[in-house]
Image 1: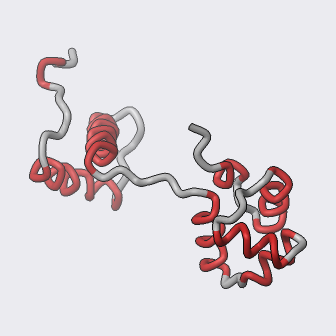
Image 2 (image 1 turned 90 degrees about the vertical axis):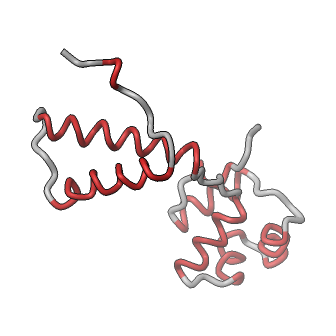
Length: 125
């Protein structure tokens, strides 16, 4: 039977580093599903993930940041963006923050540059 009184989250950076060391061997030799080792791996993964979410949150990127990242990763220029959007002015205004991205632009970028539309929606809150 599982001892729930012993289950707890990672408390500090030292425990986090110890958990990272403990999970590292599983990356070289992933345990068979259903084994005690697989259950240990899953538990360590969840504990590490929870600690990282609290202490090392990854900020959400806005649409312009996503576009800039895709441009850099694919060596696209502002001219390439203008070709997708249909206008140099639209590309410039979008990248400078003068205009927000619209649904038509999201569709064009999703289709032409294979960017998931959700990554271009931005903060809805």
